[in-house]
Length: 172
Image (tube, rainbow, N blue to C red):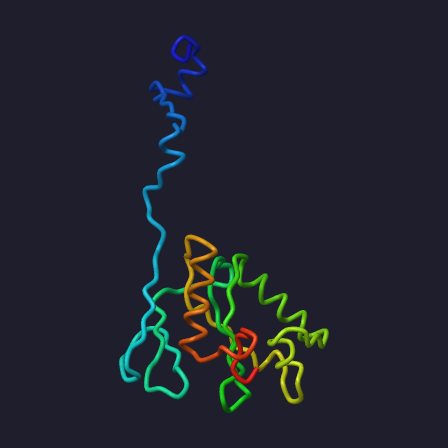
């Protein structure tokens, strides 16, 4: 039809190549060709140089973060640090939702002077504000909620933020 019509023959001097894309089969929908990134966080002596490091209070060690995360990252263990406190008030938390969403919840508690959470209680105190809050993702890419909660507990022990009643805060 393209070569029989003179007008179409001028538009398409050569026959166009027709190709069809194979629809995805069950194997292509289930199997991923790219594996998710895994992070390897560890504890090293304080004078080792790495990408991101957090000093562990009262020790000569630092916690090293080898992956990079964004506020849109979900399924993470995070740490909130107070930059105003000389003792470095720290809170270790975990969330399955995006970190940005979880931080909005913390900010809402602080802005409304709600003291029913350790973070809200600390940042609602005198001479503290949201400007004193610093957030860092310690690890992400957990396969299960249980794995994430276990890692949160290990970080609480490592950073010495466990207090009576399982409140994950250090001077918060």
